[in-house]
Length: 293
Image 1: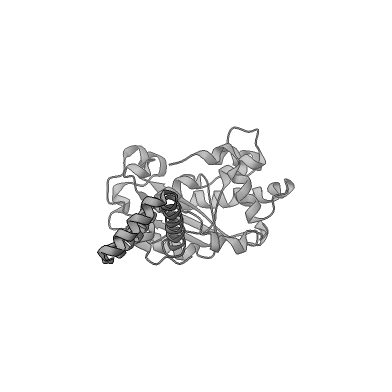
Image 2 (image 1 turned 60 degrees about the vertical axis):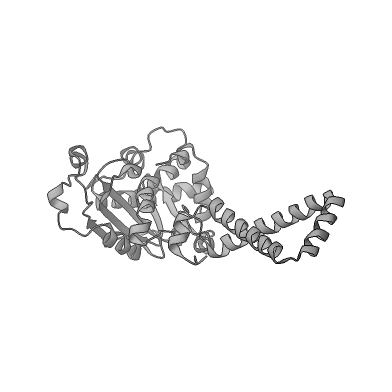
């Protein structure tokens, strides 16, 4: 679906848009009433007084038509906010085998853990996976000026301090660049909902919506190993025999996430999960899919 206006699509809730359209239709009805002559209004009032059931029927029909029209306009011209996956873009790939698709394993480092309370991205890393192989020479690695101080606690985790990001491009440059790198691929993240929330909040200042399908190695691990409680990178890597290098750097974690994902693909196939659509559906059913940021 191509939105009529991306700005409107991001910021007008469905209920508000439908309400405005319904009010507009009522305005048209009021304008018609004003144009009626005195005799025509008297005749209409007499009909309504003598047939009250007709009032309810006409109002019900009008409201139904108004809501249907509003929904049609909203669906075709105003894009609903908050969708992380463009259904029309995802649809052709839902039946594609995971072993045949192109992926971008990615990760971010941030100033903190609260995207809705002003924390910002300080680094984005990504690596491409094609036909079941990681292409280590096709990577994305950017430091980003967050426009705010990086807390000492965060620096202790990822090693990025204020001096390292001073003068670096901000998110308005970095996110469009990452979008171009990841275009026409399926995103793969570890605890991807956390990273995608940061991206979603930055839709307005960057003009970027990452609408490709997203797979999460935490959820896929829960599908493959439902009886294990530890679905951290370290926990999954230990079970699957993946060596960890560059932990808590965006590119390093992206590479590890990609390696975990490649190890999970045959294990998913053992459970009858071979296509993108099947992986997305299985992920939704895990208890970890209910976590929000």
